[in-house]
Image 1 (cartoon, rainbow, N blue to C red):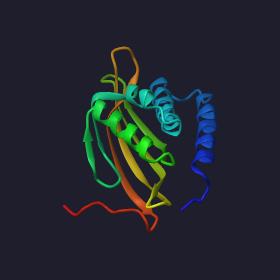
Image 2 (cartoon, helix red, strand yellow; image 1 turned 135 degrees about the vertical axis):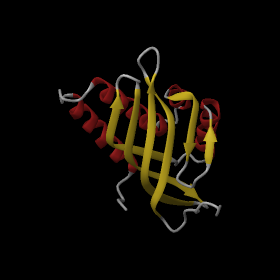
Image 3 (tube, one colour; image 1 turned 45 degrees about the horizontal axis):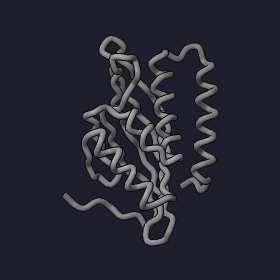
Image 4 (cartoon, one colour; image 1 turned 120 degrees about the vertical axis):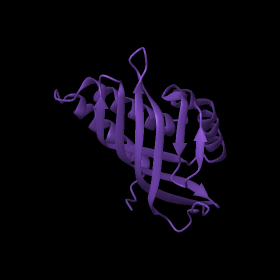
Length: 165
């Protein structure tokens, strides 16, 4: 697992977004989704729950890397507030690999990789994996997340696995 601090990775990703915006072959919807994802990353880094909430559809659903499930824009905003209050070290970065857009219906799929670090039992632990996200365009042209599914692939010894089904 990469040992670079996630904040350095976040700055590198932001630079890559700026470079990608100069690429004229990128569709405007793809550009907007990448920008929204970067806003989400920066909101996590800055513990900005209000911005996170604006990026979620009212019926948003998440399956976390530990297979916990949460539903609703309000519940997810509350969950992020609790994460930030209970663990100031918590940070997660999502890196887009691919976006597929249905322009006519205003739907998109994003596939990517994620990295996270947080404190557990007074020890900083790292985890990473892959994710899939479904986006939908709003009436005013913004893209919001309908659902995200995260799968943990790599993890430190201190990470807690999901409960068996």
